[in-house]
Image 1 (spheres, rainbow, N blue to C red):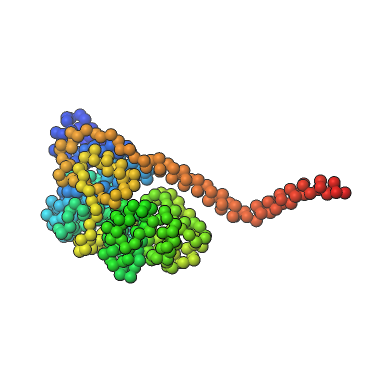
Image 2 (image 1 turned 60 degrees about the vertical axis):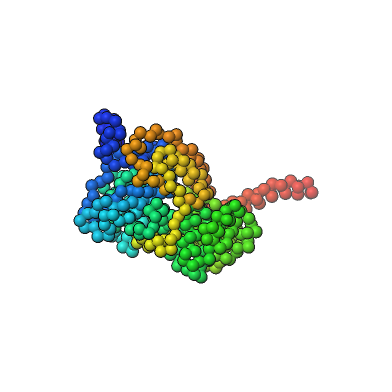
Length: 456
């Protein structure tokens, strides 16, 4: 964004002196200038706090798969330079005159959004993520509602945050601060469908995928009293699933395992973020969708960029539903944090230095699929400081997503073309049938007439 305050500040650095000297005048963030995801320490200034704002020193920030998607511009809307991070945990250092929600010294978190209109229907019922005027995301999002500054937002790979109190989440001091951040994203992403579909002691819940999201989902569903089944491609993950609390395991690559689990689940929360076939596009029985009982729900939480073929008749047979959920509102996020504190449910985390080299390593693991089930958390408070400006820029991480994305877009365009052809055929079916019939009669006539002449 040439001409923005960020770039103006950077031009001053180039002219006025060494980066490390001027870093004392600003906050510090880790940002990338382009989709290669070569992160580096950069100075920046947060917007001035208002009377309803909370200022916090960032202690930790989780690294989410969404960060990777945004940093390499998979969704085609990233504003560079971008500082990702929406799994933020820290300590309040200042509050505005009208702030009543938290006080200095409190442990707090900031999740996936930092503003919304707060006036529309979804906002008023606590679903700020569905704001009809558009929520303001924690990073790479244009402020619209006047509570998040005036420039494209910068996330939690940074030393300080300034946030309106409405969007601050209180973190009980019984919760280790280093694991609090991922609860605000992975935690509430799984908590939302479990609450929506009223999971309780008599529920039979399936979790498809055992990465960072899936592992958290197993723990939450189990704490709600559900009978929990993990669905995974690999038999090697059975021990990991049972360690997380799973009662049963379905190996999706084994037809016998899937068949044995038919009609066994009321709800499946699907965390897999790449195309996978549950065979809901086939009319005949068979496939992963058969694990749903009558009235069962298959709920997607993983971001899949490809189209899904659906055979509606297959859903009618058992009155099944395909749906999806996206994070949760502020009130639900707070409820999730409090639930996790009560039941001591914490994500499995690996603490890493907030350095460009470590970010490259983590991005490569996340982009490759993150089969470990771990959430990676940057130790901002201890490792992001003035010395960060002296660190060399690392090599660009080897990300596989770009080629996958191109393939998905090509497949999407191909499916759109086939869908268009299909609709044209259906619209003109009688005309096409008549044409084919006439052609067939003419063909038969051309063959039959010479034969009849020979017979005579």
